[in-house]
Image (cartoon, rainbow, N blue to C red; front, side):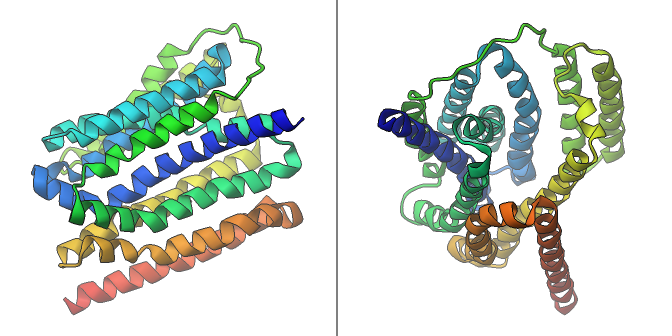
Length: 346
């Protein structure tokens, strides 16, 4: 029993570290990208360093989930960690912004493969009554990464080099793989065809829609093309015997509501955290101070994440989600008023 518990803890460390390294990579980029773009040049590609990562991670997540049904979660999760580690190393070796954009895409592929599995593997390891606490632990990793990201970013850029924001991922990924070795997966491979057609359509649709958010011209073309591909994707998935994304899940009102809620809340959280440091550094603030502005959000995240696991069992998901949305709406409203006031004063 003690051996089983030890292995369970080791696997938990692996998936928690994977969650930490993926979240740290996104938050530390928010504060250091202005410095990186200034050194490498190609400021017009600034937004693409985020977009290439998000496009690949978005399209790979459902694909990885489907492939894991055939080849097992442990194998696919390990491949994701290796790809993320390779992408991080290449990003650190970049000499142009174009190279960084491409290598960030490789990072995104690894992150997209990694992201679904911490929660899935935690579901295999722990009973239902403990999963709320595990989910809270994952949320805490995002809070921790948001707190230490400005410190690490300032430390690396001021006393070493920005390249270490990527190199730091390599030893963490190695630890993830070492602890993952203890995971003894029990699964029955499902004989089902991989939906390559759906994967291509989904990649094209999501890619064009996300591209529309970072280009300066022909936005309507990208939006129209993206929506067209997504419509064809939906029609294709309805007829496929083993769709990459089971659209029947959206018929469940609770699942649909939570998906839409996650869409808008993540857009609010990550949109502001990506550009606020960039704006402040253009105003002359240091890397550390521009990241420190996000500390309030990070502190609130950490303070609430842990007890939220217990609150879910007591009050349910819906009540807590509504309360969270109210706070998020208040935050975004305050940011809008402050930005508008600053624009008028300037």
